[in-house]
Image (cartoon, rainbow, N blue to C red; front, top):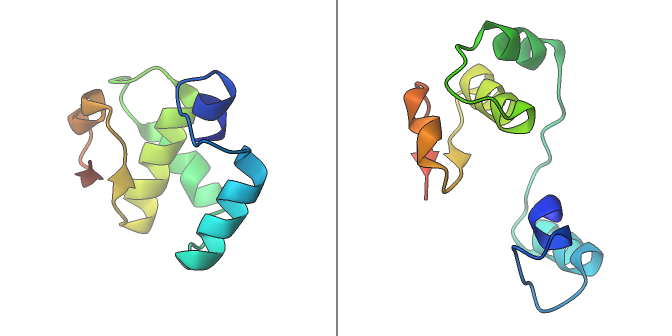
Length: 84
């Protein structure tokens, strides 16, 4: 979200910092840090998608058995539960 907002592809109608802090609190969002299991999962992924950031999100989704929220249909090549 931060990247999309900074390059003008996501208009929040306000500054990113205050917006994201409020949304984290209001929606009880838990931040997921990158750990060694995520790194190992990312290294094992087939190259269906070449963006390293998206690949890490896929690896975290797989390692943690959690859905990934993304509009990127190319991520469906991985065995993840993609929402959106």
